[in-house]
Image (cartoon, rainbow, N blue to C red; front, top):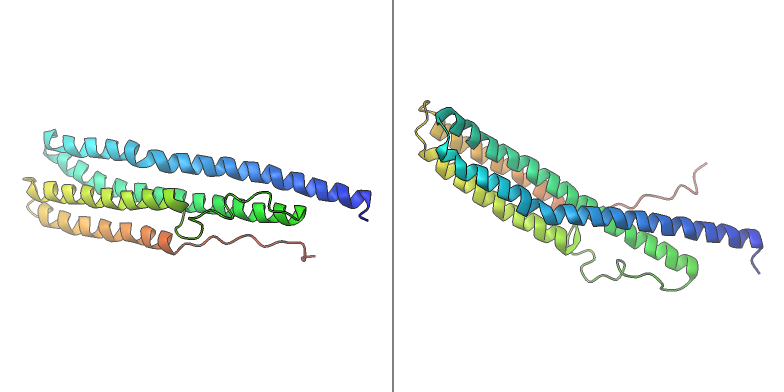
Length: 196
């Protein structure tokens, strides 16, 4: 029969796990909201800015055409970071669910640990769909930027060909974070109980 002190410690450990569970769920909700809002909000701003470029004076057109692809690097990297953080949160929830279930000796919590999309994509279905939509959006925006950039009559004759090289370099820079996202795997932190 377990002592009262052991029962009290187990209860404290369970309460601590539940507090962590709630905190990580709030973090997952934040990351999910950030993923859901990114493409419509920032995509709309970038598309609107790109469509206004032909109305700008010459040098401003060049600066705008340079700013759009560079801003895509920021958008892709931060979106991938949100998707990875969302993956971390849902995997941490899964680990906590299993710890609580082990503590209670029953399958009490099971949403993340038995979710159908578990382990299929980084950041679940939402992360996968958001990053996929972002890749398509980035390709379209880079294509439109390239079309506009090679068609403008810049003050510098070399701009049109240099802009093509610039867009190609940006494209390569966008591939790396998406490739790393596809290979990303959550690493649960190790217990420090055995350390002295």
